[in-house]
Image (cartoon, rainbow, N blue to C red; front, top):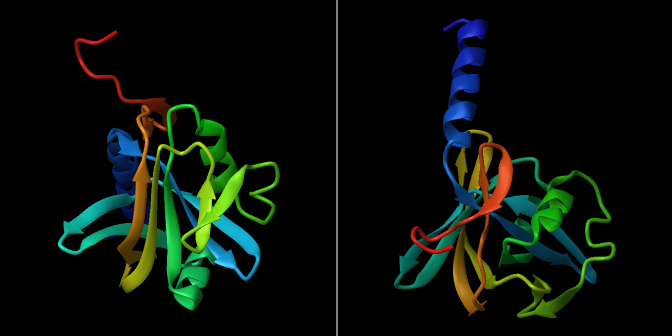
Amino acid sequence: MTAASVGSLQDAFKTAMASVCTPVAVVTAMDEDRPHGTTVSAFASLSMLPPSLLVSLDQGSEVLALLRRTGRFGLNILGHDQAALATGFARKGSGKFAGVPWSLADGVPRLTGSPGWVACEVGQTVEAADHVLVIGMVSSVETVDGAPLTYHARRFGTHRILGES
């Protein structure tokens, strides 16, 4: 396969994945008394027995290094009105929590107003290409009603039930 065909395959794959509607969350962890977080759209429930989920993080992610060291993380499932949070936590660098209301819950940062929140112990990590799948064993979970934040066609949106206005 030539470099050009690899590039075109990657472009085609990126376009195909952009056509899939995904939920958006912020993975959080604590570094002593300092919170860290990053936006993800690659996460899913894994099992009900025991309750577990998986999240995909770039191998170079600072949050991944922190999860490996501390063994704990939070998954803040964002609501339809939290696109600014998703954008803020998607950028590189520190200071992502500046001006962001949060609390410490079950040892990990919980973003105020997120309709879904799950605290996890790191159960296992699996290297896959340039990412690492982190399997989280659920230790705490809370949800409130609210429309989810989704990502589709490289834009944020939300889910609407057909037949409802």
